[in-house]
Image (cartoon, rainbow, N blue to C red; front, side, top):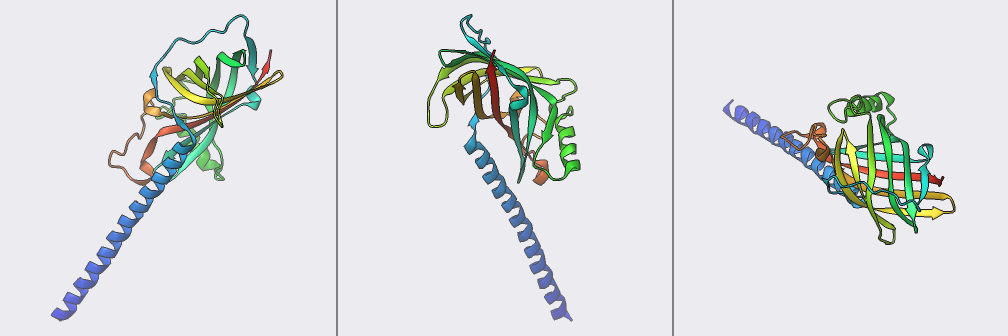
Length: 238
């Protein structure tokens, strides 16, 4: 009888150890996937460190003006949780770029924060819930702050294999403005201009703090601080 009880205890301890190890392994795998996911996102974009807002650049009278084609332009976003992420778009509503001697000297564009949506999710209900949460007061509070904008404060030619310029500008989100800098590729062909850029911001710099940091949370509760943006502007000369 005593031998049977001891055997049962051994079996229980072995089972408990296996379950504990499986849980530990599960969280280790989640952390590993998260590390890979965050690293992959950061490899493809430039960290745009936020600083105090700067004076917006004014176009010279001799500069050519290119009006942004909102329907043909796009702003993509990507945000991550612990082991996976969400990707979506925000509608660009208007914008213009000033060019002199092949260099962008001034310009801006605005986006409709209420238009934020997730793409690539086959579950329309889930995608709708995510968009609703992102536009709520928890995150971007699109009802109170319906528009965000970017205004160029400076630009310089900086040709590499994949970019042509370094752009500096004021990014306004939730009425909070910070200056950022990132590489961009600008191409002008006749009366048409295209400008593309990829960069990463820390949402905390703009007061979007919901779920920021680990704070003892695990799994789906952990929300990354970084947001990756990919901007694609198409414009035509006025």
